[in-house]
Image (cartoon, rainbow, N blue to C red; front, top):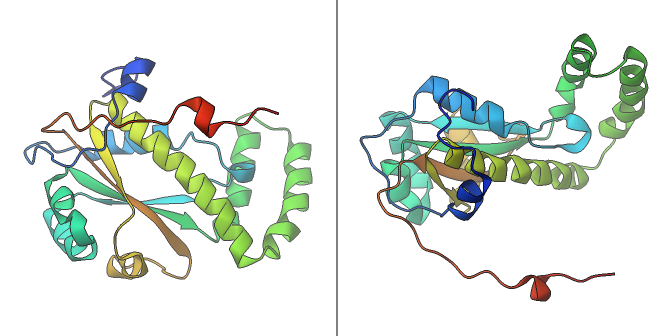
Length: 212
């Protein structure tokens, strides 16, 4: 296991996850550990590996006080948590294509000719992609990294709660980010739970799955 991880028990991570509403306010997560959590979460898949997720980590008292009025009925969770991770999706994610693919070549993950072929194919596509199509792509990718982040948090001994009810139209600007470029996806509170949370019923696979 990597530094800071508490468990790599897959069943414990998956079946032990709960959406937690109360946190121990005395527990703080260091910047070093939070960086590791985000690095592990960022191994999630994304369309042509563009990794369009962008994270805003709000862990200071000042930052949480600024976020609280924007979090609607989730203020208590925001203020109690060790941190709140605001997940955004970057509409201009292709700006990083050259860096991503060049580093893949440098590390031996991809031959130069494959990099050239793929970038030459994708560049015109991404330059002309309609805004609504780009939003669909990056929202899917940001959803994948968000779920992985919550599972990684469990491996580190923390609990989380995904939040969709907040002032999405105001959060980027409130923290000095580019609201035209970054699409808000969700807030994720993270910290040490003070309760076990509630077990919830899941529909049986027979009701959610069609076989063909």
